Length: 371
Image 1 (cartoon, one colour):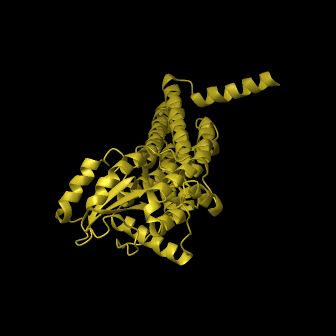
Image 2 (cartoon, rainbow, N blue to C red):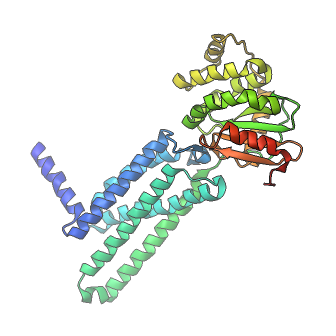
Image 3 (tube, rainbow, N blue to C red):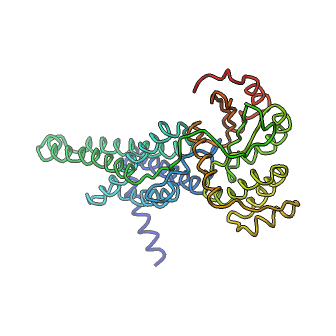
């Protein structure tokens, strides 16, 4: 039985691979491209950022994260790819439908990142490139298969009609993928006002220069920047006021936002120590309840009472509005703003955020170019 199964699957592989050198080369490249898409989807599903964490994480396709949906979808494409060269039209068309539809969808995803988020996720771009390569390889297969057909058959009315229908199907399938992506994508809804009326400021509270540190509790690059930023704060706080803004790119970050906001408004003197406690807790517990959060704070000698729900919602609305108005789409980001003029400058990513650059922006003050 085992031997029969081996022979059976070997025959499927040989048939899918093709007989000529060109067919084999295209097959291997196709499987490599689909493999890259699968690996990229796994990285996306597990929140493995590349360089920084972007707002692409907040978007959903039919309520699911892109990576979570991408894994089964590209596995299905991988399975269907073994029927690319089948004698049965329906089997071949199944693969064609999947790969060309995914190309249309990837085009939309890239458009969102380029035009709305204004930043490209390297993992997402890698998946898109893999899909486009697979599409080009499939078109190459169409070309070489057509060349193998005898000249009279290729010139016959039936042959021309078949080629025309195939072309129409390719275009229609890509548009179907594009429309499906448009209908299925849901985006984060945020306000557009940059004003934060709540008193969440640390440092020199009466300063006109504001330093707003935007981060996410589960962004690995934010974690890397935390100790660096902490060392800067005493110097920054002498000449400006500063605060921390939550940009919940990863869903589990929402579990820590109420405690962070409560610390900022009710325990300013102990905020930095409380922030360390929350960061430590997030390393081993993604979904802590209020009791566990309070216990983690108490270990550092901090007693906290949470803000009421109405105040939390109001502050969250203000922070979301600030993020939208200042076009922050990656974490970590530091925004240095003159509150008199509303002008601001941004430092994006862990490599840009340095004390020298923040100090230079603070000195620049109201001379920021208008955004």
